[in-house]
Length: 114
Image (cartoon, rainbow, N blue to C red; front, side, top):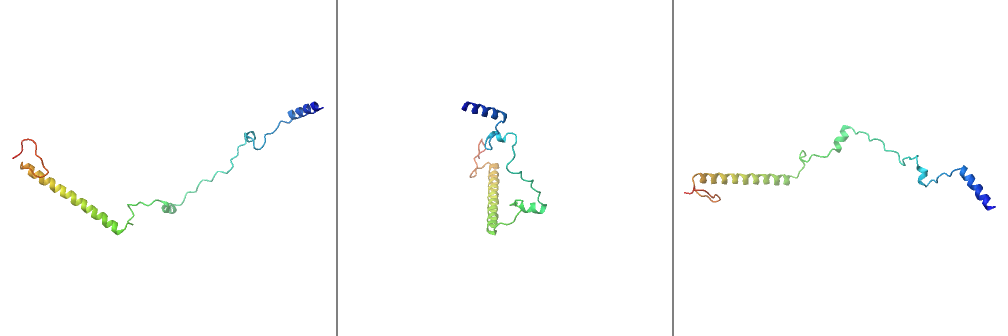
């Protein structure tokens, strides 16, 4: 008797194919739906709002501490003085070299010594 019941159930199951379960991969074949809707396109901000969000140009902004500005000015002045001193030293060395005399820092080569 069991064989008849099993055969009958096999025939009935052949007439009605199984649908895949909700948690199987075959259930989602052909009906892929995104779980979240796509976000809407961002709206363009007005120009006056975009100006607020623009990064600051540090060189255009005069918001530095006065003591730091004084330090930078003194540093520039020291550099200018050092360059001027080097220039005067080179001119002095060149003057003595044209006379054929040694000067500290100048070494004459070739037969130009006096």
